[in-house]
Each structure stands twice: as C-alpha cells, then as structure tokens.
Amino acid sequence: MARPGKQEQSSDFVESSLNYLVDTGEKPVSYSAAPGATPVQHTGRYEERAVTIHNGRRGADRLSLDREGFIFINHDTRVADFYDEDEVRSVYYPEMERLVKELTGASRVLVFDHTLRAEDDQTREEKKVREPVRRVHNDYTEWSGPQRVRDLCPAGEAESLLRCRFAVIQVWRPIRKAVRTAPLAIADARSIAPKDLIPTERKYPDRVGEIYHITFNPDHCWFYFPNMQRNEALVFKTYESAKDGRARWTAHAAFDDPTSPPDAPARESIEVRMLAFFAPAATAVAS
Image 1 (cartoon, rainbow, N blue to C red):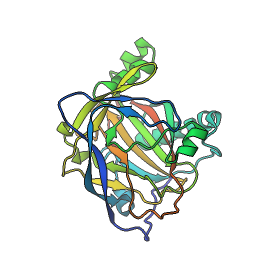
Image 2 (cartoon, helix red, strand yellow):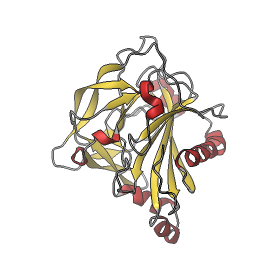
Image 3 (cartoon, helix red, strand yellow):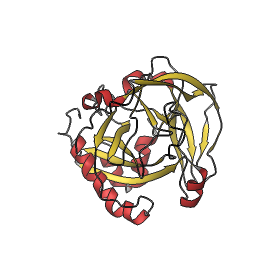
Image 4 (cartoon, rainbow, N blue to C red):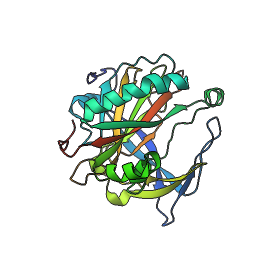
C-alpha cells in the first residue's frame, strides 16, 4: 500500500456543480430502491450550486483521515470479479479489514456491507446494482452511527463497544476501468459547518436509518481524484464518536466532470462500509 503519485495530465481543478439540499425546515426522506435501473425516490427540495473541485492528487500524500476526513491510496486487490457476491465477501472483506486496521490502528474492524454502483441503466439492470448518488450527503449521523452498532452487534456487546471510541470507515474504488464519468467529489471535513448537516430519514425495506444531506455553504472545499484506477482507493470517515477535533463526517457526491471524454466508459464502482473500534490506548490521531 502506498500513496499515489500525481497524474500530470490532469488540471489543478474543475468547475462543476453539486446537488445540495435546500433547508425548508422539514425533515427530508430518502427511500432505498431495489437495485437496478429504478432511481432512488426522495422528498425535499434540492438545488444545483456551482463549485470548484480541486484535484486531490496534487496533495494526496498530505491527507489525513482525522484532519480532512479522507485519504487516497494505492491498494491492490485479489478480487477478479466484483460482481461475484461470494468473492467480494470471502476475498475483499478480509482485505478491507486488514487495510483499515493498518491505516487507523483500530483494535477491531467489522465489515458490514458493500454497494456496487454503475452509471448506465443497462449495467444497473443487468447486474442489479445501484446508481451513483448525486446529492451531497454523509452516510451516518449523530444518531445513526451508534444505532448501526446496535443493529449489527448483540445487545450486551453493543453497549460495551459504544463505550469505546469507534468510527465508520468507507472505502471506494473503481471495479473495472478507470473512472472517467461521475467521479466522487469529497469535502474537506473542516469546511463543513454543523449547521450545514441536515438529518434525513433513510427508509429501507427492513429498517429506518438516518443520513445527513448537506446545504450549500460557499466555505465548502471540494476535492476529487481524476482518472481513478482499479488499484486506487479513496478511504473516508462517515462517523467518528470522538469529539476532540478529529474529522467526524465527510460529505461526498458524484458529479459531472467537464473534462470527461465523450466516449468515456460509464462509471462502475464499489464502496465498502465498516465499523472500526479503538481500544482505550489507541488515541493517536490517524494519518
């Protein structure tokens, strides 16, 4: 594992737009659709806002999970076919557990789910996977982070684990060709104010969760990693229990890259989510 180098053919930034929530005072609801070509349904009002999105490759070696909230790394995988559910669970999940332990010093890592996404309708329908998410969001909230521990662990164990520091870590990567369309934009956690985070109900067939949708703020500082390859990964934090100045949330969204070639292949990606628990002695800030 290593930090990637620069790709000199890419510019320092692009001008694009991101889809933000308009805060009307009502709690939005997002409905989890079945995988396939059907788009996600939601309530709430959203608006496109013009933003500058910086090339994160330029300073990738200086990023920190506990400062910006994300890092960008080289990471090879033994997975041959990410559309093979058994292979993802038997090969990729253990790889992710080892990776996050190495990156964070966590004493225990529990990989609990993954999502495959494809930009084109045909692939989504054939492979039964989801669409890229273009609304600016963070996957967990002050409430739903601890609730996910309770959902996944036996009651007695969950309450014990919740007395320790823990985080939700996500790892995002291309699964076939380089990502040239609908890349992921990710915000420096320090640029997101608490008032920008709007709790949004997330309805699944078997449970109700909660995410943050984000309202526009001109102070937001956005990055992306152009032309991401299959052996590169974006690691970011979507919940942090510590309230000591570490990054706690990392807003992100897919966007239209104006430099994408017209014949670029549609994005195909995977994101894996995991709980990282830290023994009381593991208090150092992660790199």
